[in-house]
Length: 209
Image 1 (tube, rainbow, N blue to C red):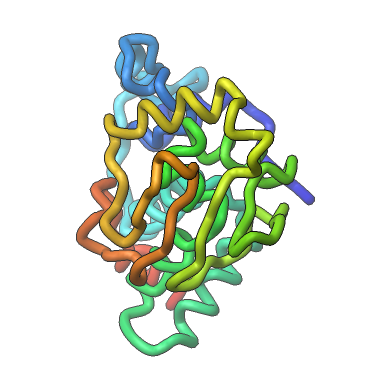
Image 2: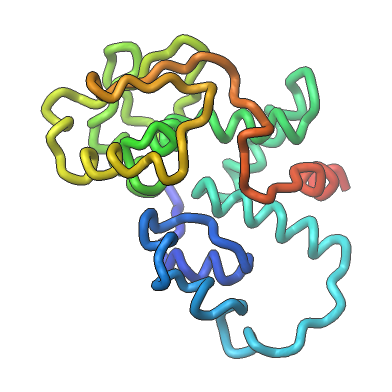
């Protein structure tokens, strides 16, 4: 399966926004966006031309896609599914992305970043309702219980991430039991808790053309 293998910080600089792709590093002065707040490449510091409506919509889609670490084809599938569901398409899309297992593992605090959480899932450290799941795109449901394999609860990266999650906070739709290294999906994700500056309507407009 195709995946992005380049430098994560280039993606943040291209979007001129912290996408928090490298965990704790993004909170320090080593963050690339803090040090070089302009797009990467030879012409990154050139004066910006007038931006079209299409370019604005495209950048919004790219920003969200990169934030969740999803390739173009898979992102389009999520949009089509969101459009098929009842409700507001943009909010449905964000809800589907939030319910991906790799994102939930990150939100709970088992991992420092979505990339790290994807690795934990792939390496079979994560259980859903007591069963091992190694598919990062697995969509969780209300009342699902996500836990860390018992042997993996002593892994340094998992312990450190779990202790540091207070910095970004755990969304209210997840109920965490730190002592047991598990969490329960209480409700559907709440749009108001997505603090990143996302304008999902621009994505809908882009795909509606």
